[in-house]
Image 1: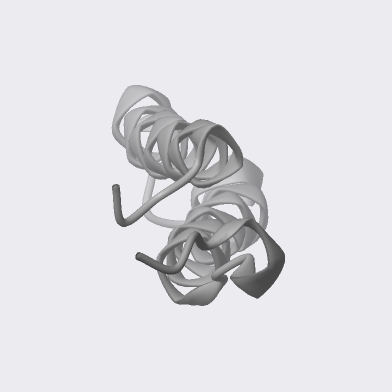
Image 2: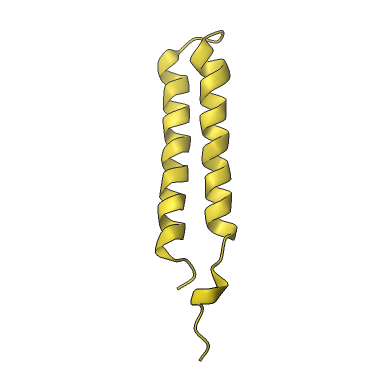
Length: 66
């Protein structure tokens, strides 16, 4: 398989963070609100970073040669 269990867990965490960030931005429903201006973008960017790390990290030690 391409990914290990760790990769799938971090990928799921990253996607969850992105969904939570966009949901929090939508629920506040204010243009000048604290959550929509400061908290949500940080949560969304950390989710994107977690997804990128989950995709790019590969454990070379667990690869089996045929």
